[in-house]
Amino acid sequence: MATMKFLCDTKRCIECNGCVTACKNENDSALEWGIQRRRVVTINDGMPGEASISVACMHCTDAPCQAVCPANCFYKTEDGLTLHNKDTCIGCGYCLYACPFGAPQFPKKGAFGSRGKMDKCTFCAGGPEENHSDAERQKYGSNRIAEGKLPMCAELCATKSLLAGDAEVISNIFRERVAYRGSKNAIWG
Amino acid sequence: MNKWFKQFSVILALVIGTTFSALSFAHDGATDHSHGATEGQIWAQLQAGATGETTSHGEFHNQPINSYDLRVLELRSDWLAPALMAALFGMIIIFVLFIKVNGISKLHGGFSGKLVYRWSKFDVSIHWLGAIPCLLLILTGLTLLAGRFFFQPYISEGIWAGFVYGAKQVHDFMAIPFMIGWALMTTLWAKNQLPKMYDLKWMLVVGGYINFGPFKGKHPDAGFANAGEKLWFWAFAAFGLVISASGMLLLFPNLFEPSRTLSLIALVLHSVSAIIITAFSIVHIFMATVMSEGGMECMVSGYCDETWASQHHNLWFDEIKENGTLKYKE
Image 1 (cartoon, each protein chain N blue to C red):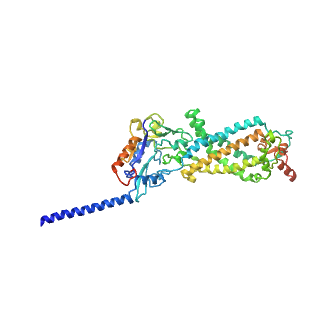
Image 2: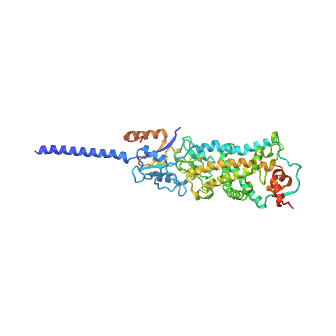
């Protein structure tokens, strides 16, 4: 089976936030106010070496969130995606501490760890509920993978900076780009 | 003339053009060196935890990558979770076997029937204020740390989800009475728990609780608290502080706003303290209820049997007899 990954080409990302908007729109049914699954971060903003990168859940093969979760609500799909079950989630916030990418987000930020159910990028692959059911739409948003489509963020990326798909395929695309760019100062990009 | 001028112009244009393009190439080269960061340089900055600008208001969203030692995850799943199971169930098994082999510590000559004042009603109530939440925290904490490895495989997803959610709720709210109990017990009881020289001798004969070999029939000296109780008291005071402080960070992230790495460290310290407190608690409960005949009475009525007082806390009993603070139950 495929191993689905995201890859963001920092040489192409123009910080347009199109991916953020695409994600919000596509998964609107599941997103509580203030929750943003994907964001664009610009380092060295306005200075030499400025670079923008679109970040969301990276669907780690050996996911720290899955390792740390007391409720064990995470699972891997056959496409190598890291998804979670909101019915089992207890809202403790440990996944947010463990995730290197800050992907898990919570609707509330109260005392006694009353954070509500965790929400994160699903690679537009829904959740454990039946595909395209109301329950799935309400809790996880869209399920484009079940329709044979890729995540909306990458599909709508204007510069094709954000790539989504099988790790081997997208890394080949990226490698080809790098070779084509041919900058003598580049290490691998 | 005209032709010559035309040729000259072309040559001039070529020369100037080449010079300019050469200059601009040189300039591009310089840009690549000083301004354009390579993918490798960008990656190095991100990996080092660079923060940047983002329109998102999500928590920690201005930092693309937060690096920490990933061994903390294995430490939790492979070491701390089994250790907490062992601290609870392992200690129970060991103690049951020990009592089977060794027998309990009986009162010589049986109960005297005369009850000596030992703890005030307030002391008894702060003990239970800490103790009941402590037991619930141990059981729910075990569910939160080790439940997914030891209980979840045997129950359905729905039951597990309800169980672990209940554990979290009980754990969160029991933390408050536990901390109040811990603070009161630690501060109010500390002066009776200071180590003395005779505590060393108590330790060397394991308190006289062992009924075989060279230890048999020993009754080492003990004051208001014996050396074993003192050890438990100070372990509880120290690790109670660690478990309360780390617990506060996890319970009130909105108040203390700890970093993610600090939260993970708190999680590990919380588990380590829990393992130590759990192991001590099991010993404490066994000693009070089963091992030491007449011991439980202290934390029920606050009084102890006179025989128990002279057998287990001889120096304290002699002292209160002497200074006249000895008080019997009416």
